[in-house]
Image (cartoon, rainbow, N blue to C red; front, side, top):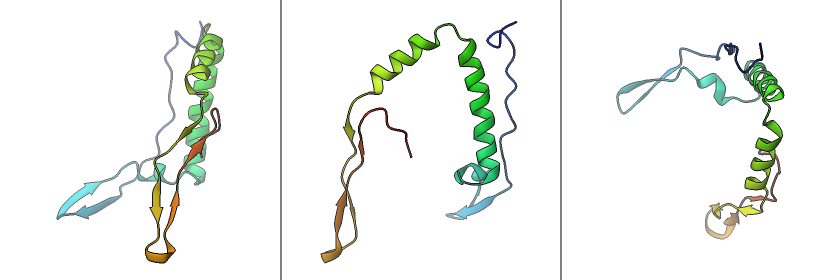
Length: 105
């Protein structure tokens, strides 16, 4: 039986009991641990998710076509909107640039 027809078992998502108060309301933020991408817990979770995805794609018969289609769709140069950093005489303007298939960081 291929992975595609099997039930996929996903890893446990890191959760916390984090809460904070905004405008006199208690906000629960159970997925706060995922906001820190460089922690061992988050890195391990991402690795487990990637293993599941890669295993699925290895067995998917249209993976090559799918990858080619995504490559065509995203292989173009693009720029983000300019944004300002600093004030007064120290102001600097920045923008983002992606040459095409560059990794997101």
